[in-house]
Image (cartoon, rainbow, N blue to C red; front, top):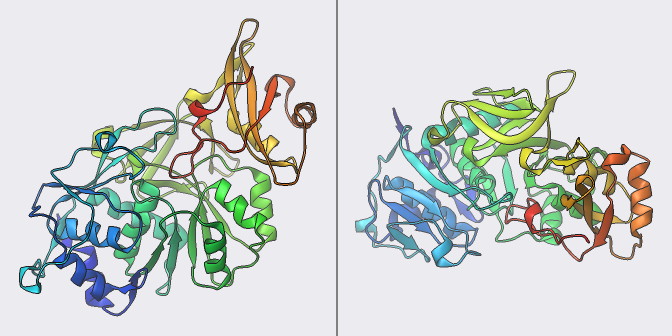
Length: 416
């Protein structure tokens, strides 16, 4: 099945409506039609080696107008670490209008639209190919849960080389709404945009939401939802956001499912979620990448609330088995981050001759606050079973994270 190009439809229905950053839909379409992609055509893989922003959006849509496959590159990686491509675009040069792509471009819903890599939070990133159908039904499912307003502007500083950042550009094209894409996270800039009423939706992870709240963000006038994902979400963070007048939309998703799987704990209308006997989350539906098979085994652990909503517990591979008891690191991290001196925490297992594994923690303290290991262990003991309390705690200036903000647990320094 073929459909009208998303960008052409947006430009036809709202040619002067804002699209990406300062470009309206008509201007974005003109630049995408004229972008020089070095002769790339249908089926070619176009490596987009551009920072997040307007030019990235131009190159993305230029690729799709030509029937090619977008391969976003993470610029932090060395060239040999990036996924293969037939051509690589590292600048957007415009062709003469006479050489522009003619009107009438269409998307084949069964064709591969984009080749991404997983975030690599638990090991080496793996390639994932998503079709136009995957992207379309992800956007429609998100709209059914979050709603769409004609004046929406989505603010994102997530890298578009990962599915969370890319989805903002996809949704805005399908909805005919606007997106502000920042090159990198800047707490002061994001807070200013929100407080000035220049965004109705924003994509955040727990760490960046906490930074906005620490910076004093309060009752942003136009913000409908802060889409919060990337990690299990501590209850105290939601409480802080609610007190600041920020309506958080907790979301769970992954690359193989074209971003969102659930929002507010509810599966997208075109997505079915299940739980295996060990708590592993499985996903079926129109958003699941064809290469994942009919059932996507996520490797994530979850549970259902009394009203049937999905809650993320953590990664199956991250589970610490200590003395025969299972410990989810995210649960311990959430308790540590409730301590007033703790900015963020990372918990993992260390080999232990007596217990098999020992629970250990690495903590970043808030500026100007102090706490020692014993104080934090006592804090955990007041809220957790004894076997979940970290045996050791060390302190660091920062925790290792992926470009999309996920904790890289394998990169945490060992605690001895």
